Length: 438
Image (cartoon, rainbow, N blue to C red; front, side, top):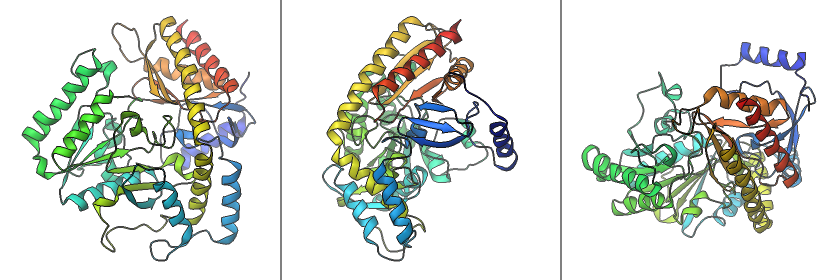
């Protein structure tokens, strides 16, 4: 397959660089035009298999389902914005009820915003309001957004934080990145225990009194930090610490939620329930929606304490409601599809790990998977340039994939992707790794 980089593509990128503030666009020249199902097309007419789900947003296929598109078109003709912070509307309430039907028992309050960053900002405020405490524990490698409060929680790269402080009262703990355990052990359970001990002995024992800590914010699977899956014991121990000290446990499910790991909530994989959940990305069916969900027992917010102009936007609510309706009707089928695709991809990744010195680690849950590239398996030195070359090679052969962590590539196709395209995508990835290793 030959990807054509036309003058139109080059011009679009040149204009972007001239008028837009620099963001995080990838090195390869993908200028999107349209998408459907397993595929995305650029403005030159090149077709790509999508292993990015546009950053885990199109979990049900690129450009959403037919039901989503129909719901959006119908709502646009009726009313787009309802000023839901001032007026009542049925559609956002119906969407909230549908979300609550997917949550563990005991959850009864929802707040709508426009992004994962906002959802986490909302959770920070709720945690402080409900506990009357100030401090929050986050984790190194965690990514919760780029607005000031959520950025205080984010600790993935200094590039995110430089010149933006000081930040709200957050202390960062060590996350059990078992491939590179900060305590030097190769045993996942020992790594988990050491990280928990550090929280109890140092953070809560020497730095902040547990009586002043409002919440522990955790990604069940760290996303931008490298798709790090902690041992099951780690999440359970966080729940214990929270319970023993009347601290709220907040689960950031912005990237890991909505069936991405094979469960509606990634926390289900660990047998743990949080007190507050944040979601975004896929939950909007392709539209900007952030959701913060809390336990009924936490109570309600005082009038005027929190609101947002576009939270509960009717078009976004229509999209989210239609997508969630599709998910609920097909839940068992989708769970089965995630399991089948996970087995196949992990089998292929483990073969690559055996075959290539550059493949240091493969990991993930469901269809939130990753491969970490290293200079050598002995040193584990991150192979950043090689990872970038591999992703560019994938792009040049019709596969979209994204980086994360220092030298990791993530594999997050739509959970509805056909097995045929899963196989093709893995063939392209394997071929790109092989060529880069030559």
